[in-house]
Image 1 (tube, rainbow, N blue to C red):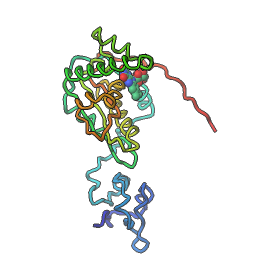
Image 2 (tube, rainbow, N blue to C red; image 1 turned 90 degrees about the vertical axis):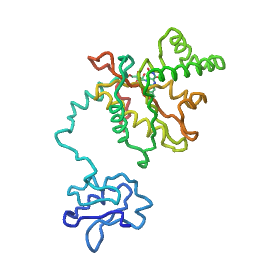
Image 3 (cartoon, protein in one colour; image 1 turned 180 degrees about the horizontal axis):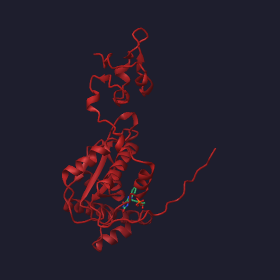
Image 4 (cartoon, rainbow, N blue to C red; image 1 turned 180 degrees about the vertical axis):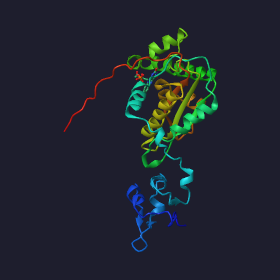
Length: 274
Ligand SMILES: Cc1cc2nc3c(=O)[nH]c(=O)nc-3n(C[C@H](O)[C@H](O)[C@H](O)COP(=O)(O)O)c2cc1C
């Protein structure tokens, strides 16, 4: 197998693919002057597709990826710094949702974009569980409350620090602080032995959160939920998680009931300039 093939009619021998390969497993053939894989290419290729997507002449293809499969980056869609600043600092955690379900194709789109997050060694370790029925979200939130009640009994002081008594008290007054009445919940899980699991899944969920905003959806991290999933076996089982996985994050999803008009102030960067 050749791993990469180069269309010599198109290749301008600029060596950009060589420079951009993060694993340094593409070199210029000293005789022919065209890019070729190193002998250990197969062992170290991250399957990141950088070589294909950075080539200005679409000359390079991998045995599993051609330029025609990689969407072009359109100049007219590049966001300006002003747009990016408002978009990134204007996103909010949404906790009041309309009683309206999000169509499945929109949820699929959310997940598709979330999966373009960076991940260590391009492992893309995330798996997803989407709770589609609002009644099921509520049932699962109720299981979190069950776990909290047990925890409060066992460790009253610590549970106070974690804010559990207030969450349980709210639930008893028909206010769900676990999933905030969101119609859907998206849980990200990954192999518990993958050392970058927490970071990789958090980044994917962060993209999901941002993209949800652009789709007119609202999202909010469900911290109480995913932390409990991993420590309360009945909930872990109810979620159907594989035994060797952990839930590394969960996001409430729905249509926001209210629109934010301004961007609240956040702490200024605490920086040490050296
Ligand atoms: C890891 C993590 C867990 C969170 N868990 C919850 C949660 O369980 N419930 C909730 O209402 N908000 C939760 N949040 C949302 C934060 O409270 C929110 O990001 C913060 O108040 C700032 O508001 P903003 O996101 O609108 O800027 C969580 C956020 C993160 C990053």
